[in-house]
Length: 96
Image (cartoon, rainbow, N blue to C red; front, top):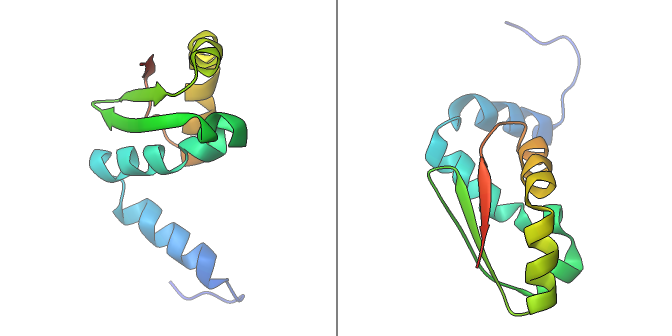
């Protein structure tokens, strides 16, 4: 199909990767990448470890106060990550 209007390279790349990188492993990798954006700068500063396995995002913190805060808002944070990714990638968050 031929495009009639100009499209930005960023949009073309986003479309390309969305179509081709729909595999679970690449989407899970992106979930780890957007953690800082979804959680915010203060929480990101106190985050020590983030990894994902089978739809479960494991997050470790250096601050007990931040750990307690994130524990209470796990579902909202998982929803925010999934909205950023435009896919249902994170099913639950385990706070460590």
